Amino acid sequence: MIKVDHVTVKYGDFTAVDDISFDIASGDIVAFLGPNGAGKTTTMRVLTGFMAPSAGDIFIDGMDLFENLRTIKTELGYLPEKPPLYPDLTVYEYLEFAGTLKGMKRDDLLKKRIAEIIEMTDLGDRRDTLIRFLSKGLKQRVGIAQSIINYPKVLVLDEPTVGLDPRQVVEIRALIRRLAKAENRTIILSTHILAEANEICEKTIIIKDGHIIAADSIDNLQKSHEEGIWVILRVARNEKELIEVIKRNPQVIDARADGERIVIQAKDMIQESVAEEAVRLKCGLLELSSKKASLEDVFLKLTN
Image 1 (cartoon, rainbow, N blue to C red):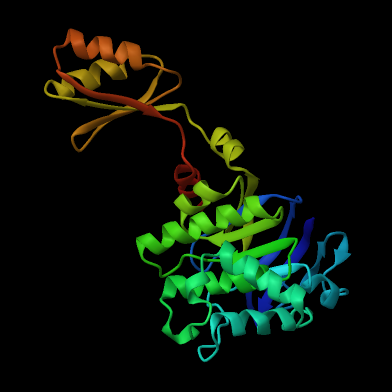
Image 2 (image 1 turned 90 degrees about the vertical axis):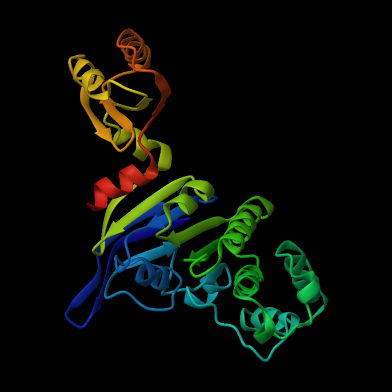
């Protein structure tokens, strides 16, 4: 569906995106991750045809993006970080305007589509409200609504929950999941919020300093960067003695106190032997749990 081939973007002497390449299959929901200033927004702008790269090519559905820009834009939906809203239009008027900008005729089919996406984005009771009177969360929904009005095959969302309160974040994430299920499409979600990527996406591309440093499914990334099992332990007493005993286990890579907990990194599952030692030393076992590498662990390791 999407092929990015050796794309570079320069602003004068500054290289924002440096020779990046990746592929995204049809129907994929992909998180585009990176620290602030890594090149995420620049990549999103190039992917959607809003700016041309300094070098390289982009193909969408087998067509060169910039040689077929007018045609391809009818199959793209884009929500920039700051949605392009018109405060003096009502929600309905704005969506009608957005539809005509994307080549849709002002007819019954457009009216039907507006009704569909107003229902899909839960904007029914705000249909005739001026956009200036909407909360930030509702404005974000309107922005998402305009991005899907033309039945896009590819939907690009740039930081869709930035600046929203926790309730609004939950609502927008739920909306994105509904959009992915309701109409089969490829979704690219640019974000620096790892929980968001983990909750919504199946695959991820990580960019740092303008370079792609990882591109795979979230599961594969976690597996490939696992360094054993992490065991979390909390005891009532004899903590130091227990740590020394645990460190003698050949399966243990590291064991240390972390606040009120003991954190153990091991090559394999050692919970049973750890519990036995805690009982033998009469430590008063309060907690014992384990976890594998999270997306956050992988991201922090790759981006230092």
